[in-house]
Length: 496
Image (cartoon, rainbow, N blue to C red; front, side, top):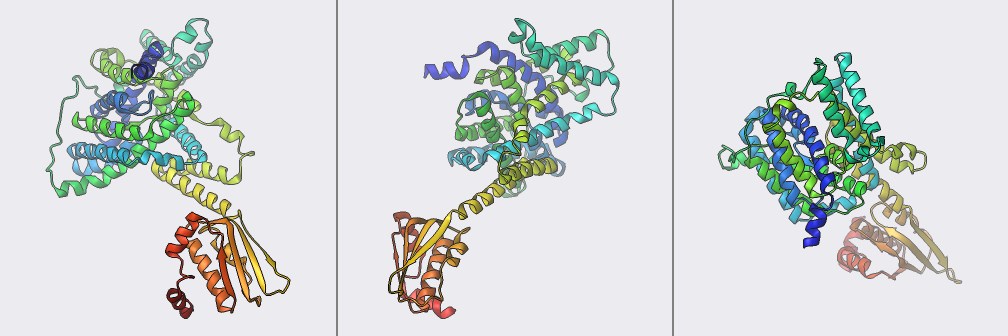
């Protein structure tokens, strides 16, 4: 117990504290921007980011991952806020949390094993592109100072680590933010700052029960939104957890993460915040800045409120160009450049899945749709590939009246037609033996194919013997097959 606490909280104190500060600085403009997208006051996003980050530090299943208000979730809230107002959004946030906790107890986090590596790569690349695209409004129709500051920020981020001694001690994104803020203040540069994004809150969040009627009508209004928020939130959180697993070479508990996200969203809803989930950009910033344990996530949440309430006057003067530089660094670091180099090496199906996932996510700005399309494509390619690993060979006895068919491989919906086409039903035979010792039947489509083969041979006057079924195949054939059930077989044959 003590060792677990030590590893998850206090094994990397300096790195976690510094990384948490960097993340907190990056969270502020993001939370404000996402609030504006959702159509709510900026403090709603800031309160949500504070509550979610603090709660998930204790309840989440992936140490070092950052959760807060996100753009993917904000996009789903627009219609609800416009048509019904903030109170219904808070109610929907609470229901979102309940649904996510339920998903955790149903162990839906385990479904991540069905998401192929090519889908994850496509998801990562799409998010990197979206993160970069989100910075473009800050780089269009602006003065040359913005470009100069952004370029200087990128220079500091990438070159500072090479400075002897202190280059390894301080996170370069933090140095970038502090340096550019000092320069902007000292030279009195007219440049867009965090303060221009919106009004910052001046008090801590307070307990707030949504002022909505507790009836079925309210449930009918919020449930579709809550279901969508729960799915997108879990999908983004679990995908981000997988990415952080790879970055840190450490495992995570996906089902605990589902429950943790639910608890965090309930906490946010009760404190006047909107629903959120894991953030790939901030999680990468955290890891790249040295954050590894739950302490970094807790620090990010607490320092976010400290910045807003205590250092707000200084905070408002941080140039947006500095944060844009940090987010561009995140975009570059997030994108899987190996996936471009490996396009020639990887199978065409893998490349199609990856590219399609990227295109759909970027086009729709909806992670759930993109990943869903990617998973569906990957499943289709897999089924098609496995379907080709099925063959049927045959031998005939010396008399020419008995033929033995040997089936090898997997018989299921994709290979069922190939299975049927492998038999010659017009050959005049007294007996047919179908040897399934090296075959496996997976679904009712495969069972139906076997029924069809047996009944066709019998119709031609041949005796048919099926042998060698393994236990699992025999179970599904016995349950759903009709070739060994005289009445059913007669009905089928009579129907032809």
